[in-house]
Length: 255
Ligand SMILES: NC(=O)C1=CN([C@@H]2O[C@H](COP(=O)(O)OP(=O)(O)OC[C@H]3O[C@@H](n4cnc5c(N)ncnc54)[C@H](O)[C@@H]3O)[C@@H](O)[C@H]2O)C=CC1
Ligand SMILES: O=C(O)C1=N[C@H](C(=O)O)C[C@H](O)C1
Image 1 (cartoon, rainbow, N blue to C red):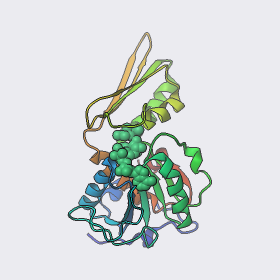
Image 2: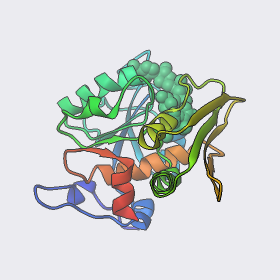
Image 3: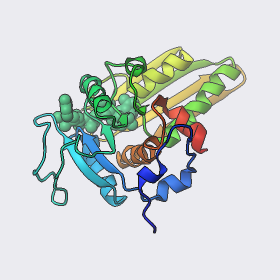
């Protein structure tokens, strides 16, 4: 497959490139990725997914050490660069407090950033920056399409609404960022959450009235799903203008 340098595609002044979803999935951009929170569960999943997709891991930031140059992160990945020395995009799965300063940093060096962290921050915290930013409390493309449908269902029909989620016991926030975002949009009558096991990740919607029951559920079987889709979104984000994006912007353009 021919390699396309993303600089050839990048948003320039008045042109916005629209890239069909299938192309984003297979396109081989020369994208130099920085991963913040690389030692964490999601960070490790991103590394694995980037390797599978032949994406160049340019740099990483971990809590203990912001300059990881020269270290071996895993058997296969040796980090050779500092973030500011040429990263094309940053993906942040550390924590929300760190995200706030990470975005300042990304803005300083004019590097687009995907914020995947949840709790303790809100989208409007990132209004003032001049880089492409993706606010994505849930990077699953499937879930975001379902969220869109749930919003429409909740508006169209008079339903008593319950939303819930089940996640692994190590998850720090409760309810999940996805659930909070959804509740802000549809104002559910009941919200519940459970913490079980090591890998659970499930979101559920139920709407009921006298005539119908609507149920939608999304179960993620492996974090590779969040990692894979986050990288697809990054391929899209580096071609966008300086703006704060939400997942629905991405969905609206590619589907
Ligand atoms: N957007 C999405 O689709 C998803 C979002 N998440 C969110 O991503 C975040 C991370 O989740 P996990 O990987 O499960 O947590 P984790 O606790 O396994 O990983 C977080 C990592 O960030 C590191 N870290 C903390 N402060 C840091 C800093 N200042 N600089 C660099 N690294 C720092 C920690 O040492 C840890 O290795 C959470 O907020 C979680 O809710 C998780 C899964 C999917
Ligand atoms: O911590 C997780 O695991 C997840 N966090 C995100 C959230 O809080 O919504 C996304 C997904 O639920 C997995």
